[in-house]
Image (cartoon, rainbow, N blue to C red; front, side, top):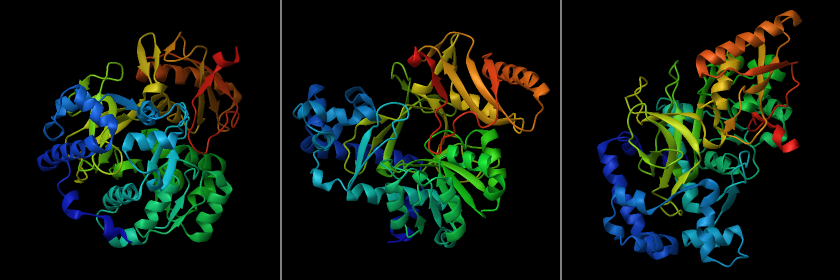
Length: 456
């Protein structure tokens, strides 16, 4: 197996074209016919609205198939099995798949709720490699010799999550050497094996990259990395954080999303962040909806909404699934010349806060705080006295000052940050400045909330 086994240049060149949009509807109808027979759920949904699978339109599809968050997807099959059925039986009922065909059983990390289960069959793993190959092609400007020279240090958690073992399997299928240390191994092992094995590509969360910089800045810069690919949380798309990581490691940074169902979003190397290119519109349908009403939002340049995905390949039925991410899409051609419309993650629907009617996300706050480096470390916590999204003003926060400033400057720095947040985010917080390294660091995903209401 190699990169050439999976990369399809002819499809890559027509991504985000009218031809592919027509192909999406063809594939949707074929899959509806297939799963009408295979999945009782799809049969029930279509029969209830008297829809013929081979003639379904996108409008009918949106009306017939409700949106489910990732954690709810497996529950779609729960009503068709016994009450004591385990999650594998539920997934088998949903897909009509023999459980023995589930080659990898995984889940999300559960940082924002209960872990959401999902799986990979052999077919799913093949499509994951196909989608990821397109991201590597974009990042290396089509130079397959550069792709052959990649040596990846796997810094995502290996346990359960899609960016863990499934990603390792994907790199192997693409013929790319991978060093599976994992976040569980700790940063010292990540440093050690990057140096000893000569890794040139770090695959990790922004939180891990930041932690490495905060604790061992000189060693981070001397690693000799060519690129860091981040995912699982906003980071590379935040200008201040992007600058910190690229400067600190002296390498290029991109962010990415996907893998499951062959979905691939990846950002290009333009100096000004352009969003992540979507490179899989022959493999999945993407929609935007209102996060509260789930009303359809027209897909046009600058539109903002909750992202919804429908797989067009693999073993999962064509259901509408959302990660809960709130994104902004850009349909104008990118300066880099690569195909695919683009999107920028603004935040997650379950991370959203409302302060006097103003919506604010931790990712936006992160950008403001990081902009005050080196006077701050970049670490902060949002103190919640009641369950979100509503926050009774003021928004209370802890922010770490750095060793770079004098004690006499701390109070004025706090006021500067409060004023900057008021200007940029229309929210004036109440900030408590705390000493360096007093806020817990994460090597997987950062939890920005301190839920005080759970302690009362």
